[in-house]
Length: 306
Image (cartoon, rainbow, N blue to C red; front, side):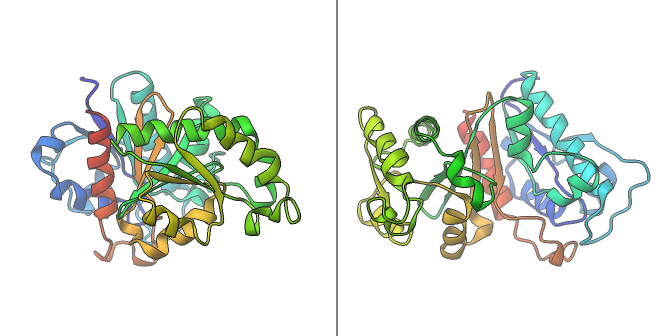
């Protein structure tokens, strides 16, 4: 196999993942499909109207699994995990150079006894990496310092070195995407902490990190998350980086169609992309799901892999 191949793991079979994967494949030119290895349940894929001519397939099965539309199920979780795990192994072994992951149910993984809180947690614990989660859509390029943490743990997870590492990774992906301009960084506390009156993280961690980074790139902040988007557009900045998950995603998914956003995990030895929406159990197997996020994720994997 050539290292220009891209593996696509099909995600949770009880949600929309198989539907959007097949729809995305059908929309892709043969130029892309001939370099895709699809990993998932062949039986479920055929139910989703997969055709063998679309791309190569590695079948992943789990006993006598039957689709339970819109249900959280440990066997569905096991299939989605085994599919992803195989894709990650192929990448680690240098057989492929990019992974696209369809949505999984973290709860189904836990039901199956899989003790990872999603794909990124797996990368951190198994690959011993601290990757960057970045999000791209509608001219917005953004990223996170911390990922899936409770709000109560965000402050203790911050450090000057962590912010430096994450921003440097973000800067490298912006360069890879040929984007030029300043990086804006958000505050953690309301009103940027009011000079330490309602929070100390800006003064002791975020601002010192920015001062050190100014020697390496154009960066400014911290900015309140309620006006950083306005500054981003008015200043034609290259990207924004936020301190915690919902500080970014809560806004982004309300100003951009969630099905259009591409997530890029950066800082691994290979490229990983994915849609940012979930399994959408409420519309599973009703032919209602928008496949644009999955389509964009596959295209982006190839772009970053060129």
